[in-house]
Length: 413
Ligand SMILES: Cc1cc2nc3c(=O)[nH]c(=O)nc-3n(C[C@H](O)[C@H](O)[C@H](O)COP(=O)(O)OP(=O)(O)OC[C@H]3O[C@@H](n4cnc5c(N)ncnc54)[C@H](O)[C@@H]3O)c2cc1C
Image (cartoon, rainbow, N blue to C red; front, top):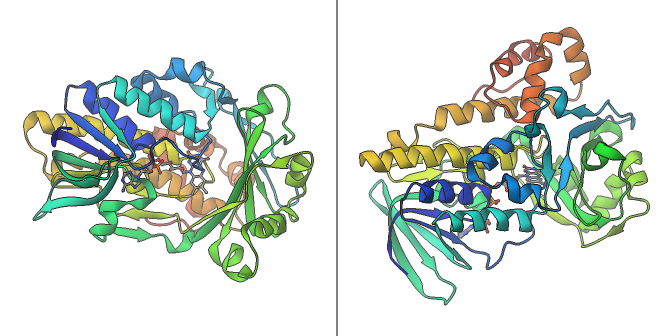
């Protein structure tokens, strides 16, 4: 294997595969190292409609269209009383194909994107663990990695892209990663087979269901092969710390007992594997690039699962970073300023989701009441839920929303 590349990408999730595909396509020598020998189970299965545009650019729409992934036309919210809001159909906002998206099995989805990066000319090594990012002073110069044959090698690159997800190798090493104290959440999740689905185009809807008292909420994401992904999210203290004696399945069952519509959907279903837990997943780095390095996807930051924005942000940051990297390499300037040029636009979109996440967790805030008082904000909310995060309408939402609930200040880069 060569030891010198233009770009080395750490991690083969959606963010890493997107950068690798788009940079390699432009003729730059690109290496992607992924620690898993084959794509493994991952949570994060529901997509947002605006992912369509990155898929189009990557050239994977046909492969997605031919897949067994479930079509997602809508999202529907249930209150603590069990009462459902009307489903929100993305096509009401935009009748084009881009309003139908997918609910994916992540192992298959990640494989599809990795294969695409390979087809576009990136060298992909699976089963290769990046042990460290190499620096010469402030400048990243490549990585040290353990290859599948256990050999430890040093690989040089003009640009090192950290797409390592929650491992966030560079942000941890440089101590530029900050957790969001107000979003100190945890989640317990698993898959079932045979849950109740609605009919027709509602079959693939994402459901977001509050438990009684709104202490936690469930997601219900229909997947291929009659599977459904179900998880519960709540404050870390509430969900896990206060129940130290219980195992993960017992915690899941305790929350399920507080959510009647979810119980009804799961009554005929069979659980496929023991519940898994993840916690402390809300954080963000305060830099997106440095000399010779760039952060994309969860390696830069992750907000919260409620609006299914994680994969969208991974794809969008991957796409924007790829364009910035190609321009920087062409000009022979891979300084922090050049590589971070996409940061302000990307974080503007991310901040919009972040504010809407805060609104969702404000107990006495109601989107229905907000929209009744400010009907002109509907378009902005719809655009955020669809993933059109930099649409003009989005900017109009937060001043009036800030009068009805406490919203965070924008995080600086
Ligand atoms: C509870 C929960 C529910 C979620 N639900 C949704 C949802 O419904 N919809 C949605 O869009 N998002 C959801 N997300 C978020 C979503 O999973 C992530 O945002 C998304 O996977 C980020 O993509 P990524 O490519 O940045 O990182 P990842 O998909 O995590 O990929 C990172 C890759 O890097 C590899 N890696 C890590 N360290 C190394 C190393 N040292 N060397 C080599 N390889 C390495 C990993 O194996 C992995 O394949 C959810 C998140 C949580 C916590």
